[in-house]
Image (tube, rainbow over all chains, first blue to last red; front, top):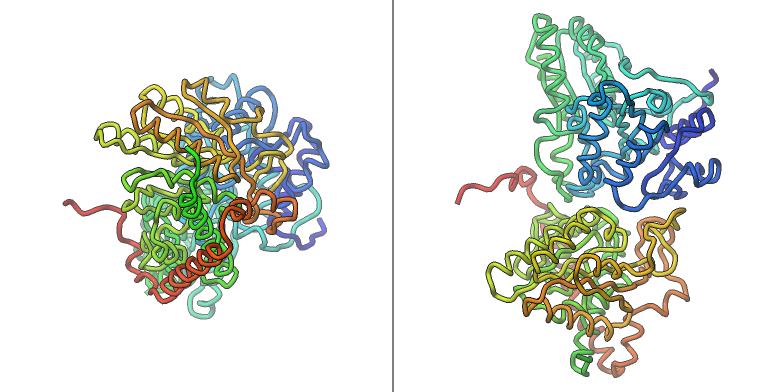
Length: 323
Length: 315
């Protein structure tokens, strides 16, 4: 497939167009999705009409719940949540109804809805506009959790998500939107549950997701010639490509997990537990987690930076792990 | 209750204070001295001012993500407010809050809020505490037309009426003609009624709609509702139509000629003698310059402050 350079936001836009053209049951709604300032859904209303593309009132409970209902009734809604923190007002619809309905029905219904969510810190937006929270959703049985880190994956994973017959939460870091990369013009799928080996290495395994893949790669670049760093992006947290992670640690014997989500009870702990269960004897040193401490994210840029994972913190962790 | 000369000048002064402060915020944000852009209150000054002029220090407000007018009208210290917006240690909340989460309990400003409609249930709690204490303090809950649809807001209207709480709900409807969200003209309306105050009746409280750019109208309507709450007769839902003249987060940032007719400060200025107007503008500009200097001079919080306040030590 011929590639050309587009942004993460454009890649998401192309995925919507691909699936809306392919399947008339794909409908899109959320706050301001018909706005020209929202890149992922830009132009969809003009192209597919306002029956299929709807602006919703600021009522997360109502429009997420309506997506769940439309999905059960045979549609394939792609519902956008402006920021993940705003989804917390609708936790019943997300965690009870969206996540559990298919199971509770004993399989007589399905909920093929994709909840697209913007996430992420680094913009001095304070404690209710900055969170990641993928760990919270991954904790709940029944939700697939998709966390793209680059334009290629954004397009391929969103297409796969829309086609998948289950509830999915698709989490897009705001700061990735302008990031550019090589993406095919055609429709293609990146399967859910298959990790991406971003860089091959032999001394240490670094597991990172979303924006943190970039930071991990910067750290690996800085250590080039001294430490051979393998960087793995799981791309989906549920399902998790356990084999890719375990096999890499068996090869390198060292592990650092980088996560912008909170440290406690989260993705970083999950990966360390997985390795402890399946490759403990391969570990030559204790694993290290570089994640956001359990502190609500502060407004002050200085305090925010203090808390977030960064290239410098990853480099320090790698050096400590392989010392 | 109509406006006398002294009250008119007082209201005008506070509106000028809010406008001057926000103009400074706009400039400081462009210069990078304030680290993030956020929603401003330009065009809505008459609402917070006409409401707060009736409030006591012991009364509380719950605010929104467009909070500066509410906070300034309630009497928040300008120096600490400006320092907070710059993320400085000397700010109300030591740089942790920024605009969206500012708390100043010393004047009853109990929270700006980053979640649309998020402060409304909490504000019913301030009113509940007032009712229990019996000191005849009241609470004012601010939200917008978007927030008015949130489940938490609807539930709180019901609860406040059931418990006859001393609270006034103030809905600032900033889409009085064309329905917009963050400046974008939406493809489906977010309200299927013209006046949000119509909902009051269904919850069992009085409701009315007013001209939010007319300080005299706000003053009168708010006075009546606040008196009612204070004497224990329960909640009221007031709706004020307003036009956001600048400061939308998306789209254009400048008011056009047509919109200037809705400028509450321009309108009230006609009632103010020219000399007094000049005096007020000079006084307020000087105060705000002091706040800017205070903020710029203040130190950043120490890095270890990032970890403080997650839990409180036992008393």
